[in-house]
Image 1 (tube, rainbow, N blue to C red):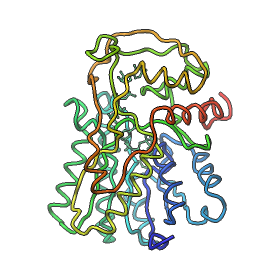
Image 2 (image 1 turned 180 degrees about the vertical axis):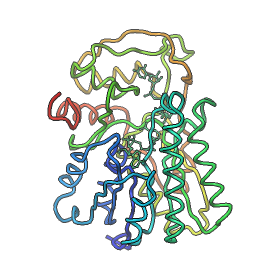
Image 3 (image 1 turned 90 degrees about the vertical axis):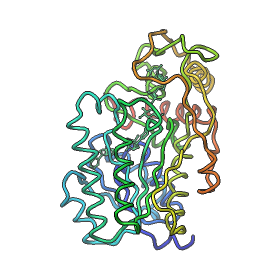
Length: 335
Ligand SMILES: NC(=O)c1ccc[n+]([C@@H]2O[C@H](COP(=O)([O-])OP(=O)(O)OC[C@H]3O[C@@H](n4cnc5c(N)ncnc54)[C@H](O)[C@@H]3O)[C@@H](O)[C@H]2O)c1
Ligand SMILES: O=c1ccn([C@@H]2O[C@H](COP(=O)(O)OP(=O)(O)O[C@H]3O[C@H](CO)[C@H](O)[C@H](O)[C@H]3O)[C@@H](O)[C@H]2O)c(=O)[nH]1
């Protein structure tokens, strides 16, 4: 397509939910991609489906490496055999609950893994990084770990100003690739709203617990900024292009959201419309630590990355349902 033809991107955590969707878009845009993933929260089948989606030719530009960022040698092995132009770093344990309940495991994985990655990148003079951050940086103090990782990125850039780092603060990623071949497949009982709704829709969970119906919002349920995972994937391409073209980018954060708020009850209604399924609900007390209303200010990403979300809640629910309907058990054949 253009100069991206030559560019080689390392995607950590590329077998995961956001990773697989981003890898599809990267390959379609002409990038070469290497994934490193320890399959802690994903399966190889997801990568096979990425290959199937992009076809045999583009698949030749995709390499999967089983490896763990906690083992520096696993990263070293990759960098010693090829040059990477940039890294997109998704590999992390993402459960907020886990970061509070089992902090040592969470820090070991996310902090040690990230530091190993920076060190190896530095050693091989690859100093461009797109980092997955979260809108939780705007939230509760107990969710601070990802803010900590943002601070590390800033410190690294301060110490070595030649680094170019884009911190992408995701709002609530949902939906799936329009093909219905890849999507979110959490292990165990889902914590997040949409994966939970999808499991209710196919009978894997009996009903949805709606956490909070007395918030000061129009229907009493909490409001979030849901963003289609394909829009999110395209946000990473925009961020990469920014890294490659703007020597003054430094270490900069952008919000990836739509700028629109949707309540839990509105989301359920949109999903019911898209799927034709009734989602039984139970109104429950608020979930500790949840904010009332969270939505993104999107101007900076629009202006500086030239990126704007294309999809609304209807498309998110359509694609979420298409994925679920075709894969009621996710990537598993049966349970
Ligand atoms: N999905 C969300 O709601 C959300 C919101 C904000 C931020 N994020 C961040 O975005 C990133 C990707 O999220 P996701 O939803 O795709 O999660 P995911 O769990 O589906 O993907 C993460 C991938 O990283 C891999 N991984 C974890 N630790 C690893 C390690 N030490 N070495 C190698 N691979 C490892 C997992 O096996 C998995 O495939 C994460 O950093 C997450 O914190 C996600
Ligand atoms: O079974 C459920 C699950 C969720 N909710 C509600 O649905 C809304 C969205 O909840 P999610 O768990 O899907 O998402 P959060 O907004 O809590 O958090 C998510 O988005 C954040 C960014 O805003 C972070 O990225 C975080 O990691 C990610 O889990 C909340 O009001 C929550 O109380 C329910 O009512 N029932």
